[in-house]
Length: 262
Image (spheres, rainbow, N blue to C red):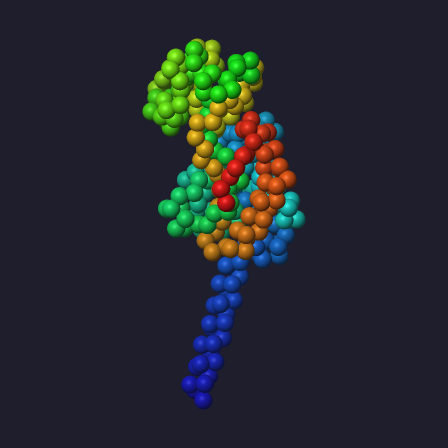
């Protein structure tokens, strides 16, 4: 009799434990039940996420977060994060998703899962609209500022034709300053640096010209949250087909999202 009671008690404890883990292992059900999704976003990384003049977050990542919430039919709570703590927001369940210029690599895949890519992150050549640059051959005879040793310097060195006047500076601030001051006709830099520069200097009429290297962004999901990951992947796939991803990328990056990995 005592053995039976003990087995019964163990069974109840196991069931309770499974129920507890089940509740915490299915973020999608929790979101649907609460009718709210918490999404971690950047506020210090234009044009992907920054604080506008109205003191509200804006940028490509914020638009994507709002888009996902709208497609899921739930309210949204935006949780500002930094590069240092964004992964922890998933592992401690402070956020259901992280949309914060997150690249995918083997180390991160050990602790979180990733959806399909939703936006490009890239290094490129930028110049005023009035400067005719359609291909790398058009850089011949033109001056291009770049930060010495950066990824864009390495890629530009491979692709720039003979006759290009590549001027190397010691840091991003010096590179941007040279372009803004008109010391160079074009600038080779990352999307985030260019976005910030364009926001501060709209009078220059700067636009995306040539892609140097693409490193797409993915949405972070808690480890094992497959239902939520697949749901978000459905939304991303539909947004690709409808052209909505391209519209967001053009709005904030000056170029379409293009082909993105799944």
